[in-house]
Image 1 (cartoon, rainbow, N blue to C red):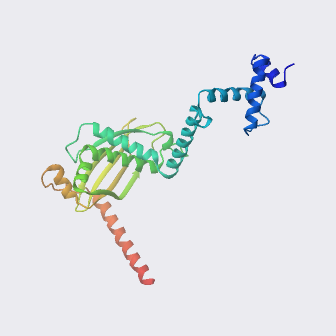
Image 2 (image 1 turned 120 degrees about the horizontal axis):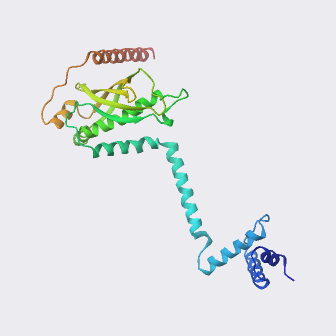
Image 3 (image 1 turned 120 degrees about the vertical axis):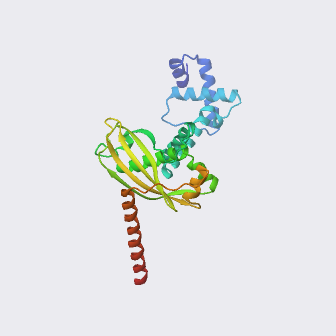
Length: 275
């Protein structure tokens, strides 16, 4: 008569009684070596596990270093790393920034610093809000990428590296004229309007490709640290260049920012005196 394990082996795998008893002997040896088998594991799965263990032992492999186990450990570690990155960094922002700069670097340079440059875009599902159109914060994000492309092609980034300078956003104002819907294509046009002794002033337009409508317009001030706009322009043009005349709307915007700064300084001094 066959034992119960041999009977299951004979029914499920076609193994004869002699080989089944051999497997039973190996299984008993495993139990004596304190290998714990879950009580709910079927005999068929148990036989497969024993067979895998015998093959690995025959080939001099360890269960801990099996290819399947190593792959699983690598995948688990990669998953944890991705969770940490996405939980602490805006990964897509940095990835897209690198792609934008690389694409602009591969394109022909634009020697005219004041020339308008355009980059294409489309409203993706991740850009929309509950109303189904582009979220207002995404406009500012797209303006970042457009400036990266502008600064790469006109040599602005190159000048910053050469002079040991950096640029930060000092102020920005955006006016929304018509929303961009999900899937709508647009062109983001950027250009340098003027500069003073501390900053460059840029204008950026969101233009719908469906009908050419100007959907949004943004003004921003790019402050230069550890250098000056005059030095950057002299580096790019190899001569001293005067700033173009400030447009009327830009002058009003600068006046508003100046008045706001003065009001905040006054308020800050009053608070210090009160303390």
